[in-house]
Image: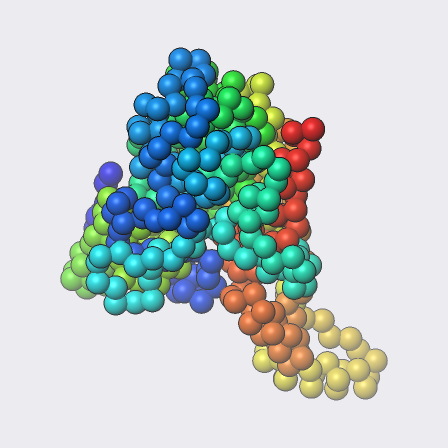
Length: 440
């Protein structure tokens, strides 16, 4: 993959601008230290690559369980039971961009100078809120809830070592197709799949093209925040880059060469192993990666997105999206001054309104609702209504309380944020109910 070189100055400037925003807002993106596949192996309780053949294994459509498990074991992680337990009604979790399926925090062999480590999988994070922002009553993670479904074996497909790359340019899709075939062979059942973000695009590749036969082994598909029509953040990097490139031309020659090169080095490192954090905050790491070729492929209208296969017509796809509606009011003067002016005008029977009074449809902060639900047979939209009133001291204080509660600024934090959707009780309940309904 090509790195971000000095002649890609537009991408760099967009990255510089968005990194400043993301550093305080995009809290949920996991931060991952260097680790090799062998370092990710652990006990079955914490998630371990599957290497043995459960009793009762056979073959399906010529796929032999004994051989397929050995072949896909670097990517297939068992999250419930032990390797010796039979596999029944498998549910396969597929993580997204720059993420992981490993549920336990570990530290790799590389020296870590920041608070990085292998992040908890989004599927294993405790549920925190409802869409309304209220604390959740049931704090069990999605992974825990799925493990309690009757006769259900939960697995994860982990491609974190390649998760910074575009899924259509790597071996991710063929490996995912192999994992689906293998679980079907081991269990004799179809495989239900929950895919987050770019994991949904990986699944579309796995089921399309020359791998169409895999579809017969798939039951219910649930996608969560999958950018079927692109990501607004990836598009914003290019737009901001084009708008500010002229400013960059006035910088010193050293800055024009050195700064984009630093971003390029980080991208090359992540493209060789997405679990490498470049020793920078996770939010900035994510925005850096948006400037790389994998991130640029996620722009709306990109050639890569246009090549993503359609969902097979026989498949039932249920899409989940986050939908932040932010009612923003703000004035051009400090809140205290605006309040005084408004009160003074009221003496004369005049009413002053803030300069800005808008409702912003922000999706999940990364992917718009229309993109996340495109081409689906059914959908569930987790809607979060947020009021941001910056015209009064009281309103500003309320917004401060909200950001403290959500651990960041909506729409990049909180129950409808892209990387926090699995911490939303409404989302977890919908996934479990959809899988239960599909099994009749």
